[in-house]
Image (cartoon, rainbow, N blue to C red):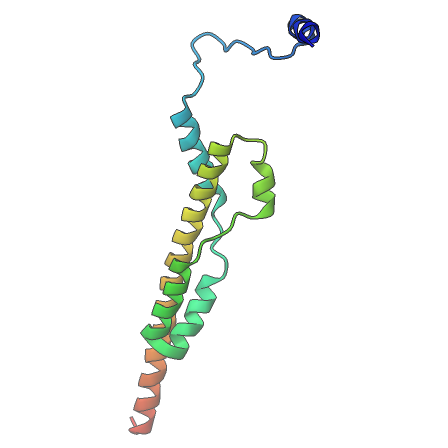
Length: 143
């Protein structure tokens, strides 16, 4: 068994196994902190998916005013977005730390976008709700 290991180690350089290419002059390898920061940024960039919260919250705002807006915002803020399968496959060959930070960046970005669109849609729906109430009350008074 020892002979096989010695032969394998002796042949490794000849076969190109376990060899690293030197970096060009003046370029250093990124630190693990830089890699993790890049992973989070990559995840945030991939998380530009607002996914329908504007329409849901608009309908809630029209139907129930600020209460509906608050309910939809609470739902949007409480959920944890899942990384889509295609994104998971894209980062599957990366180190585990990279995958964790990428997923965290993606989740934080999507959740932030969901909350922003939920508030925007809810406020627009609430404005429509108030407009309907004002239009109904002014038509019943005869003005």
